[in-house]
Image (tube, rainbow, N blue to C red):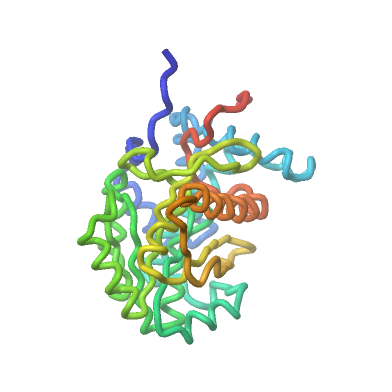
Length: 312
């Protein structure tokens, strides 16, 4: 009998809160370069100990190979992937501690940013585990009256989120843990949209409640399951839906915000295929930005239906 890969939500978080706090102190005392010196042995420890994450990283990099120039691909490695994750992890905390400011962020799509500024109604913004999605808080710095609600399943990262909530003093951002969109949650989100707020939801992890609301799409040349939730939610709320990607490039974060649709409408007869088409278009955009920043996609679990041959 074939053993199915563990769902991402069942993977326990790594490390202790004290360890994270120590790394934050190191960063505050020694700065970025000093932090990297201390980070290196920590990453070595996790690289050696986390076999499944290491294999998942290698699988992802192997999937990227056909899309990259050979010279670029040869510079990639699972260890570099882990190192990049460590650097972005500390940036997540710096965001919530209000130590990453607008000067550290580049908005690459000014027309779309202007549209959000001028719009009287809110919308849904689909993010991913590519780069640092916490930098979406930069939108609040740009527009102080903007309200964001971040939907997520955070039960697998209790320590991480506890420290985030302790460090954060951003009242304009609401962290809402959900496992499903119940009528009560839908009403709450609708009120946020009507008030001109935005719902942030990840588009690259399947629901924790099962695989009923997922689409089988092509991602980096192989079949993968991606969630339909963001698109169903946008249709339900009758609001615009955007894609947002945030990549770290030369010590600054570059935000790419794309309007996907002013209003999604799925027919009753062809609903499943139309939703899947929307999910596939998102997969193409995620793929594009993964190729642009290959070491910044942080899904360290078996993602595709069939794994590639592994060479660690």
